Amino acid sequence: MGKDSIFTLLSQDAGTAARTGAIDLPHGRVATPAFMPVGTNATVKAIGPRAIEEMGFSIILANTYHLLLRPGAQLIREAGGLHGFTGWRGNFLTDSGGFQVFSLSALRKLSEEGVAFKSHIDGSSRFISPEDAVAAQAAFNSDIQMQLDVCTPFGTEEREAKSALELTTRWARRAKERWLRERDEGYQGSLFGIIQGNFHKEMRNRSAGEILELDLPGVAIGGLSVGESFDVYADTLAHTAALLPAGIPRYIMGIGTPDFILEAIGNGIDIFDCVFPTRTARNGLLFTSKGPLSIKKAAYERDFGPPDPLCGCPVCATHSRAYLRHLYKCEEILYAMLATRHNLHFLGDLVRRSRYSIEHGDFGAFKRAFLSEYSSGIE
Image 1 (cartoon, rainbow, N blue to C red):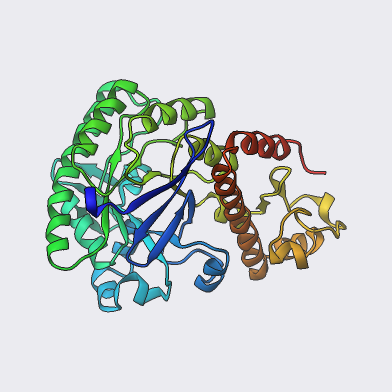
Image 2: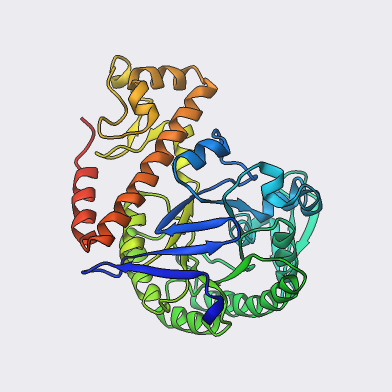
């Protein structure tokens, strides 16, 4: 994008492709690598915007599909976009609804024009085109918006994967045209294209070439973490990431566990998101330096130690495993609030430590040490 580039490369790791940088967006600078908490309905469940900001997060994700159904793009526009509607002072990335097209496949029908689908809320018939997705996200005043794409699951036959890739490219071209019109009318957000191709390397090569040819401000690697093994994920990620230019931000969609995140960072990925840390927090799983901890277990009934002795979050400084287990068993709302804060702090701290290690040229050693400790098991 030349002089209009939103990305600045700041440092490169000595032994891996990991890098630090900054993405300059309308609502502030995002230091990368960065994890984005997911706020599907314009809220990260069980935690408020000030607490997210206090933890150091500068960008969160909201979902176009869900927000189009409720409360609708026009209401959000009238409220001053997502920022005016929610009070979040940082940046918003909004996905296009493409993943919901994938995950709710029984309720949708693809065509060249777009996606016809039935609302999972009331069964009403809806339709979204690539242009509609751009217009809706512009109404949201998204700082980064994603093109409408077609995601395919692991194991998809080659012909179907090729068709999804080709449709994604055609939709990306149409999305760019509409995005440029929105920019002419004052919208300041950036459009990212999405690379598909399933797990076929030749298709990944083709998709990357076609999407990058559009010269958009950023690019996402789509179609990973869709049922494949870690080894297949790592191999496809490394192949695709190597095709991307250095001068734009790189986004991988839908990863939220330490092993997947560190693998992405090691391949030069800048931003990533997932509902996993917040969803599993609400369902009784806490991240710790020695691996996941299921607070449901009876073993923690009289455990008065913190969830993670090495964690510096306010939850670990104040509350015990026994208390959190009690709150969980009683279905207290406070449990979800505390567990969510802890898991987000854990991932935010992991990414901050990753940035520090990249700046000092030893990300590879940091990754190995972290994962060795993480896999050692809860005491």
